[in-house]
Length: 238
Image 1: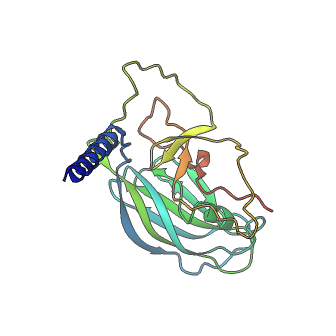
Image 2 (image 1 turned 45 degrees about the horizontal axis):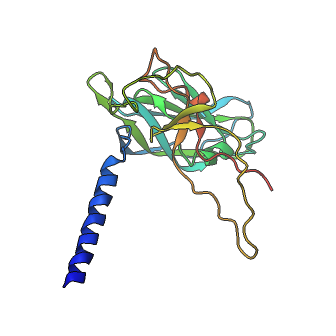
Image 3 (image 1 turned 60 degrees about the horizontal axis):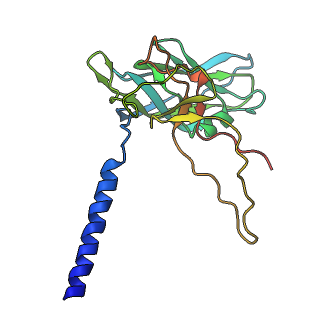
């Protein structure tokens, strides 16, 4: 009986310690958003032999969205991505920010777009002279929420009572969206060869992207897509 009580006491102490540790770990609030299902399709678009010609156009409008990130489906882009391939051009109606995607970079973005300010994005298929039909469908969107007249971001705090932060414009640092953490770009030589007789596991794919920190004059808005990078960069060729 004494041994049983001792074991129960140990179990209770371990459970209490685990609860205390869990409560001490700060939880980073996510950037509030919701997903919507869309069914927009360009259908088969015939090519143009004049480079830069728009051969199909869609308008994605989600009323009252603070920002939008699109998810694509059934994409077929004619031609060679490195040469005359058809590209996707996305333009924010709010600030004119533009993102260009070809077949290769679309795969790097895991079939999604960057984040665009506002509730309306223009999606165009631009032919660069390659023969063959192209097609694009928009299957859904991640939609940023609002609170009052500002985007609905959860409060952020600092560690400790003293705010000793300094402004930084280093393009190597940015924010991981939608997680909200800070990220840095650099080269880390930690790659190791797999043991003999085993195969290297491919990296896990994700749907996040990294954007430079918003400017102090417009902290609520997302930087232009041209400055954002996917979290699935191209792998080095063997």
